[in-house]
Length: 438
Image (cartoon, rainbow, N blue to C red; front, side):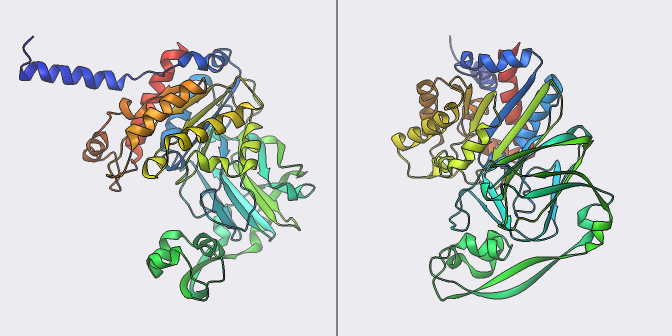
């Protein structure tokens, strides 16, 4: 057949349509999960990833799709991102009456020997209120699982109902100070000490502060809170319980849309995440653990994290990582070892746990190796009896990021998408899931 301009256009359209209809490879390995969905029971989904996931735009879309189809059994795993001075889900807010030291698992730090379920840690030694307020009434909960440090075992926490939000009783303040770096101190330890952000410290000091020199002085902007204790006249207790081990489940008599917890542990308050559930016998709990900058290897750094996440008893583990490895001088053996180790750790308690590996999408920095990472992931899926979804090809392959930018669906940084772009990716994943659950 002679390929005319018109024929070529038709072929390109057909090719493009084929990419949009990308299927889940080795979907038969997910059968235990898809069968449970059809049984109308409670299904636990756990999706782990990097900054593409921490923003929650992709996962929020998937969460709604799954829960609209199968029922809402709870909002699932969350972390108080605002309290931790980072970005996160926009369907809830978080606040506290005091500041916390905070790190995520990719940070260099010596303050916390463990990081748990959510891939983050917040800690302090004050009498603290912590509030998480959900915007969607359908996310009201009557069970909450608190993931905390084992040193808090035996300490009591109290949950409250509030008449007014905590934010009405907090005034945010800031001051500029001078900080002299001590031996071995890391950039992120300075950020945490002053409750500031990495962006702000770099703005003030330049990139030199990324590697603090002992004895050198740096400008820092300290953020702090002025708390009005009149708030305590606006609350009443709804539950009180002692913490046990490294996780504690608390049942509440009436559904709540706001989680308000008071904690005052003599050894210090250390929390790793919270899971919100409903007392129901059907529906989906869509748990997400997204950590900016994370790689497969990062999720192996702290044994406690997988130990806590395994207790969710997930019916499927979805891992959407690989973007950060695409910018790193990592070898195929190193990459695939980390993939296998992470899957193996989750399958230690459930050898038949269904796993779906999702490839990273396209990006445009010249040093990126996304196609190579995609090929390694595809091989890892076969090696680990896991399913695989090629989001790179499904979303258009090479050059698709620039096209997304032209449509205002991707950010100027060349790596991240904006909400419409992530929702488009989520729709591709959802359609692929729908094919295997029919």
